[in-house]
Amino acid sequence: MNYGEPWWISLIKAAILVNLVMLAFAYTTWLERKLLGRMQNRYGPNRAGPFGLLQPIADLIKLIRKESFFPVAARDGIYILAPVISLFTALAAFAVIPFGAGWQISHYHVNGEMANVSIGLILIFALGSVGVYGAIVGGWASESKYSLLGSMRTCAQLVSYEVSLALSVLGVVMMGQSLNLPAIVHKQGATIWFFIPQLAGMLVFFFAVIAETARPPFDLPEADTELVAGYHTEYGGMRWGLFQTAEYINMITLSALAVTLFFAGWHGPYAPLGPLWFLLKVFILVSFFIWIRASVPRLRYDQLMRFGWKVLLPVATINAVITALLVVWI
Amino acid sequence: MSPQPLDTVKGFAVTFRQLFKKPITQQYPEYKRPLYPRFRGRHRLHRHENGLEKCVGCSLCAAACPADCIRVVAAENTPDNRVSAGERYARIYEINMSRCIFCGYCELACPFDAITLGNEFELSEYSRDDLVYTKDMLLAEPIKRVPIQDPAIYDTPIPYYKEHS
Image 1 (cartoon, rainbow over the protein chains, first blue to last red):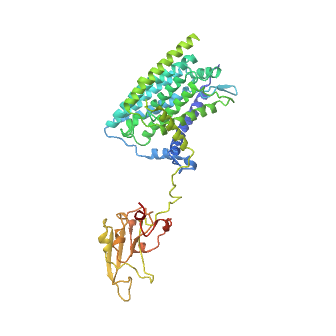
Image 2 (cartoon, rainbow over the protein chains, first blue to last red):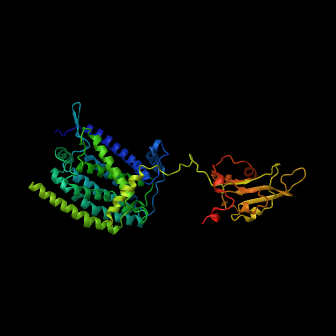
Image 3 (cartoon, chains in turn purple, cyan):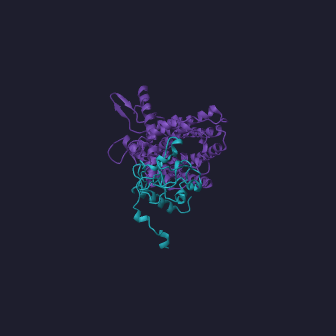
C-alpha cells in the first residue's frame, strides 16, 4: 500500500476532519439532551429551530458572549492554558482513527485516516494522559478548594482507569498483531470482528471508557451534588465551554476507538458503505453512553475505586493472559 | 459492583420504554392549561349595573393587606360628581403588583364585593413602575384572557372534602 500522500491533501483532510468532529460534538450535545429528555418524558430542546436543531449554535453564541470571569487568586497563565490543553489533546487524538479504507481520487491516493502512525493506539493513550493535565492544572490553578478536590478526584479516577483501559485492548493488539489502527481494522475485515473473541476485553474497555470520559455513572470528577462542578468550578463562558467540548470529543474519540478495535471500523455486515458504517457504529455507541447516563445512578467514590482496581483490572489481566496463550498455541 | 445487577438491567428497559411514550410536558405559551375557577390572579374592581363604582373608599382592603401593597385615597361624592354608590369614593386606588402576594384578604375584607381576584396571571413587565396598577387599569376588562375550567366541575357550593372522606 502506498502511504505517501501529498501534504496539501493532508491539510485539506485535517481541516475537514476537525470541523466534522466539532460538528459531531455540537450535535452530540443536542442528541444527549433530546434523548435524555425523551427518556424522562420531557421534550428536550425544541425552541431553537425545528426540533431544537439550532440549540448548539445558540449555546455557542451564549457562551462566547458571556463575561470571561477570572478568579483573583488564579494563576492566570496556566488557568487560561488548561482548557486549551484539554481540547487540543482531545482533538489531536482523532487524527489516528481510521474512518475509511482510503480512496483513489484521480491519481492521488487519499488515506482513510489523518495520520498513519505505526503505534496509533499508544499515541491515543498518550494523548489521553496528557489531557489529564488539563484537568489537574485547571483545578489547581483556580485556587479554589472545590476545584482542587475535583481535580484530585479526576486524576485519581483517570489514572486508575487508564490502567484497565490499556490492559483491556492488549487482547485486541495481540489478535491484530499490530498497534497500527488501520492494520487492526484490516485484520478484522479479513477474519472476525474482535468483539466476539474479545467480549471480556470489550466490556472492560466500555467501563473504562465511561470512567475515562467522566460520564455517569462514573462522573465523580464533577459530581454536582457533592462538589460544585469539579475541576472546572471556577471556569465560565467559553473557557468552561472548551472543557465541555474536550469531554464530549473524548467520548466521541473513544467511541470511535471502540468501533475501530472491536467492531471492525468501516467494515459492515453487507454493502461496502465505508465511512457511513463507521459513522453509524459511532452513533450507536454514543447513544448507548447517553442511555447509560439516563439509567444508572452515580457510584460512591470507594465503589468506583474498588470496581476499577478489584474487578476491571483482574478481568483485563486474565483476559490478556488467556488471549496470549491462545494466540501462541492456536 | 452493584448488589442487584439484574435490577440495573431492568432500569435500562424502563428508560428505553419511555422513549416511545409521548412527553407529558405542556408547551406553555402555545397551550395554556385551564385554571381552576377559584384561582387567585390579578385583581379587578367592579361597578354596579348603573355604572357606579362599588368601591366606597373605606380602605378596609388596605388595612387587611399583609403585604401593604394597596393604597386608597378617598374623596366625597358630590351631586354633580357622583362616582360611587356610597358617601365617598376612591379618588386614588393603587395596587403594587410587585409586592402583592395574592392572598385574597382584600377580597374577604371588602364589604361591598368591590374588589375580587381575577384569573389573569401573566403580569410580567419590563419595569417595576409598570407593575403599579391604577384604578382605571383595575376597573377595565383585562386585555389577555386566560382559559378557565368549567366551574360546574370544581366550584361546588359545598367543598369537596366535606362531602367525601
